[in-house]
Amino acid sequence: TDFDVVYDGTATRVRSGLTGVEQATNSCIALAMLRAAGPAYQTSVSEAAVTLPTVRLRGRFERVGNLIFDVAHNPASMQALARTLKSVDPPRPLVAVLGVLKDKDWRAMIEILAGVADHIILTAPSSAPLNRSWDVREAVAFAGSLDCSASLESDVDVAIARGLAIAETVVITGSFHTVGDGLKSLGLMSSP
Image (cartoon, rainbow, N blue to C red; front, top):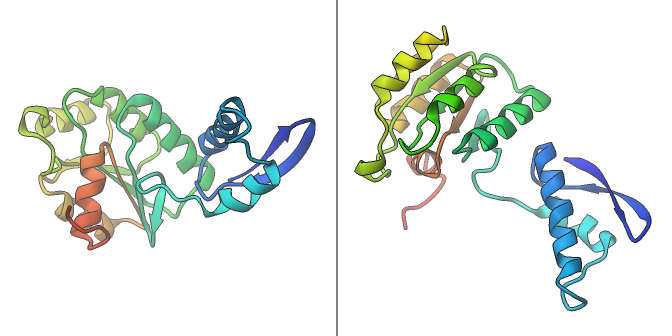
């Protein structure tokens, strides 16, 4: 993501290694916080312009081939993911593998995702605590009430495989658990 930073009256074009307009905002906030923290923490924009392109954050619009992993786990972060998907415009069809914890506003998250995904595969991450696991069947019924193309697959790894079989792009999202389970199942992250 490329953006302009005005720092000490000078405008500088900066690139972040993270994708999305929200990441430009986050980078500017980080620079402002470093400045507010005092001289020991301040950095120049030219230093930031060198280091920001190397920044990576696991599970934040992380692209691995035709997979996108994003830990969006509430409506605000799902909106950010939706905006980023619209701006990046990955190849279609786009399938989302969505696994959310029951204490989150999953209905709003499904509504948002339905606006950018061609199909949603609803799943339950196995690493989620049982007392926080959502009712995937209820979520499928809700998605159906929106006239949204959705299906159920209880295992994250099977949901991803199914997505890969029918889509050009698969987005794995909804919680840290869903993304973590997906990364582990594909051998992209080791277990702790």
